[in-house]
Image 1 (spheres, helix red, strand yellow):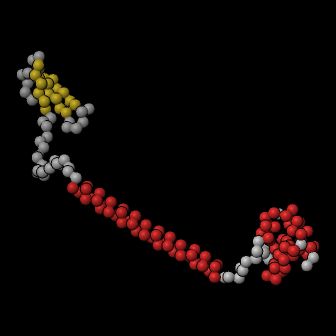
Image 2 (cartoon, one colour; image 1 turned 120 degrees about the vertical axis):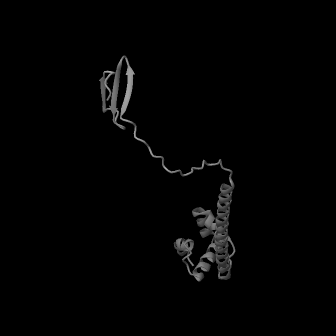
Image 3 (cartoon, one colour; image 1 turned 180 degrees about the vertical axis):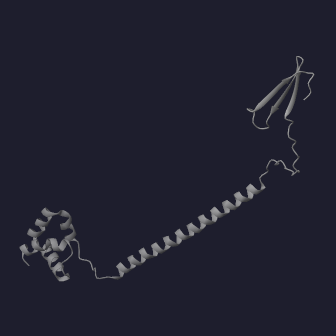
Length: 162
């Protein structure tokens, strides 16, 4: 493999879009070629360090399934815990309301005045005539029951009876 080809494959290698055979060829060339290794160190020391690591077998798909199963299990556990918390909160609220209702029912209250129904008393209309005596005259005053503006007064001699 040529050095120019390795330098052209670097973006594809970093994007992990190289096939398995090309990836192994790229890594083997970088390990064996001091010029490409130096070029990678100048470009990015992190990439060079990653390429210097020994190759690992990434074909083990069981690891990915285990991680995904663990994530799924944690999500299920959180959902169940959330449902339990919801029921507990609802039960606590119901118990608190019940306790408040019982406390209110048993709370001592001041006695309310009892109102006893009585038959209505017949209200007599006031006499329209009022007699006022003074100074040797009699004053008769005629006033309506609810309207204080309507009044009629008669002043007559004491010897005259109305």
